[in-house]
Image (cartoon, rainbow, N blue to C red):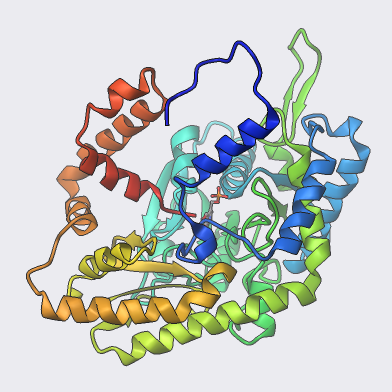
Length: 467
Ligand SMILES: Cc1ncc(COP(=O)(O)O)c(C=O)c1O
């Protein structure tokens, strides 16, 4: 479609909406259930309510919460309700725009608290499992800190002993995931918390993905170990309402055990000619709608609604796990019992990415992973009606792999083969940066021709990760 210029005259609402419908047809058809991440859609009735709640605060700018006492109460209530899910007796925390912002703030609070405590002695190491979300690497990048990736064990859970060995005078904080995105496993939170207490270090639990899932998983018997503030030593937890809370995009909760830690995330400027500028989070202007939508989603579903949502997801994932267990060429990666899992081929025969290519040709959006090469699935409500179709296609993919042993390292597989070799990683980073320069830079049309389209296609595919 041709690129528009700034219009001299405004267009009619009908033509604008028509065009949006048209553009949306270029996007992934997630309604068909072939997308195993990114989209958290429950049903039309829930979505309609969330949208109307968003609309009710559409114009509110939550930068200045003091002029929106109604919205302030809504935020307090969301924090209290999320706190109750995580067994926090005091509701200390706030809403942010998403998991990444919650994580950036949690790390900032650790950095600032350490600065106050230690004076000039610099603590800069974030110790986190190798499976941790890249938001922590982003935090390290932005704040001049260092992410130390701690190995995981065969079950893909953090190796607590390895973390212990890495703790030193420069350690700033410890991190664990509940669960991690790639494999859906929960790190040994109690083990890490023990280290945190012994060493007097803060511990952040990244429950962005699991915060609105694990309470129901526990009630249904899928999770046994405590992962939240019941564990002494956990300092802060992030949990995203815009994931399994089924709110509108733009809502995560960051909870703290106490204000002593949280206060370090606040930013206050007294020298601005425009007046005192105070900001509790990273953003300036904040959409009030996202706050209201988060509140509406939680109040609409309640524990009953979330349980009813979660149970079929866990059962759907069990069905996939059973199926994988029956195919000799396939095996699970990690020991997830949640609806977030990964699988690979035994000894990578047939090549797992040949299967990925096959599935993609059948219209599935495939989430390829590295270390080890495998395929990720987050079972979402939209996937439930098509799990049988997916398993049929997966069976056909394995059969194709069996009968075409020469079909290795093609398409996405080739790309990940390259990624796995260290000397090339810098080149990949440069190419991805180039892709962004093309996307955001001037003269889109001209730039698009600067690279062969297959290369752009591969890079694009890589960027469809971490939903
Ligand atoms: C475990 C985990 N942490 C953090 C994030 C980041 O969340 P967001 O994409 O909302 O910034 C994600 C996103 O998928 C995640 O899975």
